[in-house]
Length: 278
Image (cartoon, rainbow, N blue to C red):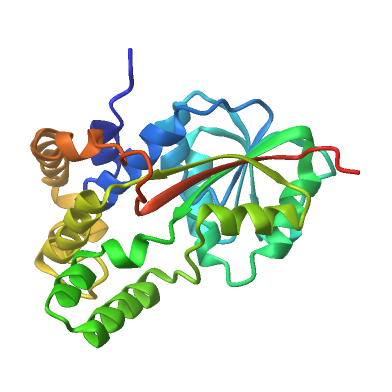
């Protein structure tokens, strides 16, 4: 039975439906890869991604994150054998510990990623794989706010809009497959696969829905309704079910869309292997 990552993600991220859509597509694409054990989830956050992708009983060997509150939630998820507080440029593991390092939408938040890539190679076993997702070189140009302004000839406004999103999401770069291939080669990791996901139509919907649900805004009606501080009132379990039911139907078509061959998408999956280089 093929997992329904859209419904699963909506149940996990009901408080941010557009985030759930993006994550669901990432998970659908990432799920097609093989994940050998032991595995490190680099930038594991609260563990929701690993729980949906690998299952609550997966027993991923290790999860690492720099934020203690996120790490506490990851520990409670039951997905990881061990969780550690730390940073990617100084991984607290011995050389050759892991067969797989997985990282979902993390690297783009790190201003200088090269030391992290060096550490990933160090902790990988020979022939181990690094599987990660990142926003692609098309991300900024597929934002609905960018597209609409660009169509009106407002190039400066389009760039300003994209720059505001960069700042809001704390994205530092958007590399294409060739960029990643060259960058990973400098640390002796060989790219074996790249794949675009999130077609332009889907990203434009995602961008519009972020505004609808107040994602990134300090105050919004939806943000108040979904606030953890109101959990004690008891209505949010009903709200979660309603959100999952509504959008699992409404967004099904977008969730199932693939990027046409030869086209770019807003997201990029990269698989690299630690080879024995001369």
